[in-house]
Structures are given as structure tokens and as C-alpha cells.
Amino acid sequence: MHELAITQSLFKIVLEQAQKAGAVKVSRINLKIGRLTGYAPEAVEMNFNLLASGTMAEGAGLNIEWVPVKVLCRECQKESEQQDLGLGCVHCGSLNVQIAGGREMYIDSMEVDNG
Amino acid sequence: MAEIKILKNIMDENLSQAAKNRQWFRSRKILALNLIASPGAGKTTFLEQTIKGLFPKFKLAVIEGDITGDHDARRIEALGVPVVQINTEGGCHLDAHMIDSVLSSLDLTGLKYLFIENVGNLVCPAEFDLGEELKVVVLSTPEGHDKPAKYPLIFSEAQAVIINKTDLLQAVDFDIDKAEHDIRRLNPNVPIFRLSCKTGEGLDKWLQWLTSQGTENS
Image (cartoon, rainbow over all chains, first blue to last red; front, top):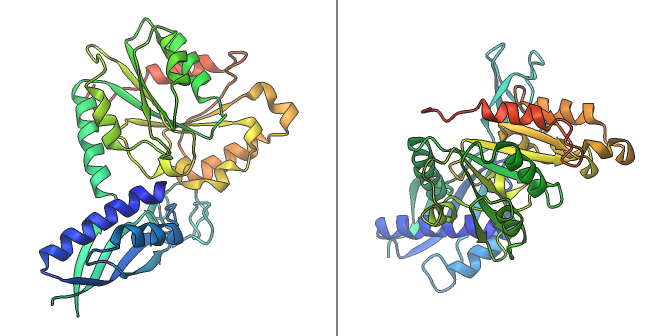
């Protein structure tokens, strides 16, 4: 049910932005999703297809670019990409890090037809 | 065919309502807590014990989030604390709009603490900010010490972690040091409280910490 809430928000933004741009059809939606989020692509796609049916977004593809988990080390000030979800600096080993990437869940762009 | 840039966070609608809730709580000096745990971790018993330690010295209220029913709300009501039940009707988490919609039905005059018991789940509640000041995650020993490693987001977001049911440590082979180590990897400075709601052991330290917390404005 988590995905339904996310998909409803996603769908609302897509329609608003498409109308604002004067589009008649949305063919592709490009998303950036962080690895730390609980985003489940199949579930969002299924919900999206249901919501979009009969609207200008019907049949639009959801394209996901996954954003890796990144942390910024408070000790050595370096950024590192995480291979697993345990968060630590790969340069100096410190656990005193802050999350700098991986929580993203946004719509980057859309491909639309303007009629 | 044209490409249009959007750059909009899918969670914006929840985040902006959460920011309003947070401002609302802070302006009234209410410390709002979001209690998150798996089903059966002992959230409601933990809440009852916390209430017994604070009430009636401090004025409290509770928002209970459940998929269906008011079993937990009745347990809280029995303690004399005002409580409002939200039923998500299948939804796996509370969101900021649900909190906003019930605030008007609670008497919040002079309120010091508002406890929000989220739907039992370690996944979805991590994504939905309610406007709380503190996220408190309750992990219980029978669930296993691997839970922080398996559900990293919620443990990395917590402002306090409770390890509940320490009275069962021996029986369930829970490696408490391993659990704490994994929690610290995700969230180095988070306070961790080992306690048993059944024996009462460790509750004093938690209550001491809680009463030392204020909102940013107080």
C-alpha cells in the first residue's frame, strides 16, 4: 500500500506538469530513485498503469535511474559510495558519516507530445 | 516529442504537510514522537510504561495508528490519557495529512508530549515524515539481532532506539552487542536504551533521557 501513496503523488505531479506544458500525451517519465528508499518498481508500475488508464499518461513508460548510496565523512571530509547498506567511510573507516545520497525519489523529466 | 524538466520530489506533498505539522508542534512547545516498530515488538506496552512514568506529572496525548480496530487506543484510554485512533484501512503507514486531520479532535492545551504510534512496520514509516521531533524505533529481542542490518533506513533515521524485551535475551539468542554495533554503523550517535517493559529494567534511563528532550523552540 506504500507504493499506492507514492504512485498517487507521482501521478498527480505528472498530470499537473504535463498540463502546464500544454502536452496532450505523456510517453515517458524519467525518475531518479535512491537505493536507500523502499521503492518497489513493479508495484509502482502496476499502480501507475491503473491510475493512468484513460488519461494522457496512459501507456507512459517509467524509466528509473538508480542513485547509489553516498556518505560524506565528518572525519576526513571525503565522499564515498557504499557497496552495501552499512554506512561507513571507505577512505578512513570512520562511522561518523552523514548520508549524502541514496534517499532521492524524484521526477527528473518527462517526454511529452504537444499535439 | 519534447522533453520537459520536472525535478520534483515525489514526496513533496507529504513533506510540506510534515513541515507545517512540525511548525505547529514547535510553536506550542509540544514534543511529538513517532514510535516505529515491527508488529509485536511491544510498542503499545512500551508506550503504556512510558505513560505511567510521565503521567499525570506531564500532560500527554496519543495518536494510535492501526490498519483496523481500536484495541490499542482502548489500552491507552484506560490510563486516563486522551487518545485518538486513526485506521489506515489497509495502509501500511501514517502520513502527515492523517496527523493534521486528527489534531483538532485532541485537547492540546498545555500538552507536553504527543506520542504517535505508527502502524507496525519497519519499511514504509521510514519514508513518511509526520512532522515529529523524534523518531523512536523499538526493536525487540525475539525479532533477531539482524534487523538493523536488514532495515537500514529506519535505524539511520532514528533519534532513539529501544531494545525491548531484554528479559528474553537468553531464551532467544539475541546478540545485543552485534545489534548495537550495526545500529551504530548506521547512526553513530543515536542513544540506545536496553530495557524490559515486563520487568521494568532500564525504563528509568529512557524516561530520564526523554524528559531532558525539548523541541527546538523550548
